Image 1 (cartoon, rainbow over the protein chains, first blue to last red):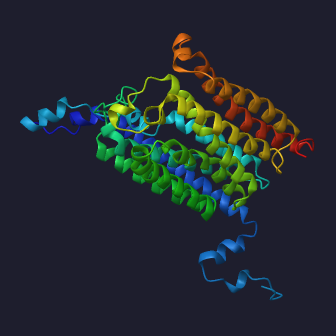
Image 2: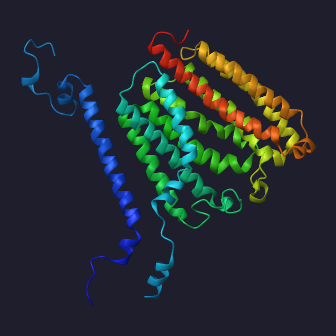
Image 3: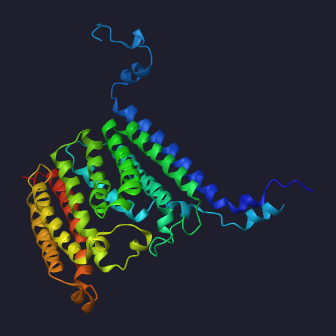
Length: 66
Length: 310
């Protein structure tokens, strides 16, 4: 018996599988878009750097105000 | 092989069936009122964040609808209006609806929190809980006032929209909540007066069946009178203005007149003109809510040019 890659259930569930694909792509687009907007809204990118990283001394202004 | 061929003969649900679980028509009202709540708020929101927030609110509302359909499948099966829903008609398994409802609730609330703020996400989570648990599981089958308290679930969206923008709750958002909350009972009972329902067969207490149609007519009038100060009061807040107030006065007089007409009728009069007045008042109630929120949006747009508001 020949091994068929394409099982009959694949055709039957095509609609659902494409639907799930679209949802996942949309979810990725939303999370990516949110990330871009949130990072741009920070204005000063050093805030982003220090949010979840240890602050690097070289990005702190020289006058030592921060 | 026999069980495989049994599987083959089963109906395979498609995306449309799952989408129907989310009650898309109810979702459109939620999207509209949430959008108005977000846009009239004094704090500007980035368009993409606003879009994601509205999407989360819509998905959250859809998720609570799926949970409602999972819980109510037994009574939906008994009523003509709901027998064609995905679960009673056999297109979707109850477990699938539960899974989709829970998963979408989680996604919607967490994403709304990440995109905006804690309060907006908390209010969305509370709305889902209120609709799926308080209304569907408890109120709906236990009291004829189910629609009054349950109406709160439908009233939250503009408050969530406002919280998305401002991160808080204020008199404006409470009054927008109050507007929908007080509007729901007369709107729904006007419908119940002319639709031949089979709630009784499903064991769901509806005011028209537990207290009779005369009592329902009185309640329509009482709630419409109580609605008027809420609707007019909103006009004197920071999001109101002359345009809103003018619309509110006209719409409230129209709705009130309809409610008075209903309260003066009896079953014989209803049968004689085939519920003409009730059908008309139900339509007016739809225009009523739409006009109020549209007027709020108009005031916000006019404020951009310095001519809206007080």
